[in-house]
Length: 322
Ligand code: TXA
Ligand code: MG
Image 1 (cartoon, rainbow, N blue to C red):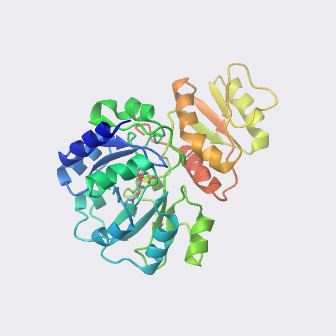
Image 2: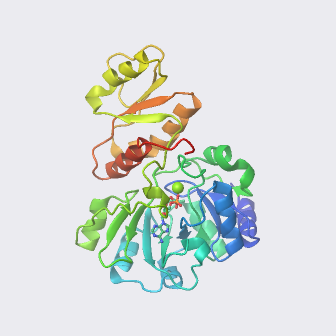
């Protein structure tokens, strides 16, 4: 990674191209948020329906007023406490936020990422960068530059490599555009920390529907099916599936005996370390050709809530075309 790469990345953005860049959560697929044609290229590259809104990445909290029509004091407090960092705020949009970015909704999602390369890119570019996770629609988010190249190599003009992502799951999304603040997606900032700063509880609002892909039941899914069990049942369930002739991967602690032909993929029990390892492990399992994953989720506290959420979605029934 050199200053010349960053200069090229800025040039690509200015010309309406796509730059994949590291953030502290996952890699993003970025385009100039002020250029509707460039933003449309993101949807084409990902295979994402155009009504699904994107997050606009900003250099600092001062840019909030450019993109949001109204900025409540709760937004300023959260920005002050957690930006740069893995928190996205949904606010009433300003005129600068185009329909291409917001999917036609009256709100816009905004965040200041914490990765030094992302911040440098944003500072040099000087505008907002619209970026979803740099994976194909519905799949597992990329936490390394190699993952991005595997998923979207042919569609991206430039991939900035900033090493593996430190957080490993996407940002927490908080809706501050509704009368009552709500958690739309658990992520890299724990709900408990947000509640402490807000001084009130933050209920989880499952939005469902086609407009918020991160809240579709089967989102964030590996190719392999995923079965969630209590930690004590990992071994028994893996054995039952293996006896049915399935190629089983156990993700978590090694059960007493691993069934013949099954694979074991350890993940840390600490929730933050589990989050960091989650997507790379799911990708490894897919690459090794396993059909079904048996896993146990951490308890839904702190970063465990985000891991719990992603695993639950990945275990939801899917349509064949997903
Ligand atoms: O950590 C992250 O948030 C990463 C990095 C690259 O910043 N980005 C990311 O983007 O996860 P994406 O597009 O994969 O997920 C963004 C989520 C989607 O579920 C989208 O529907 C939701 O944010 N979103 C965007 N704008 C919204 C809005 N105006 N209201 C509600 N949800 C919104
Ligand atoms: Mg995504």
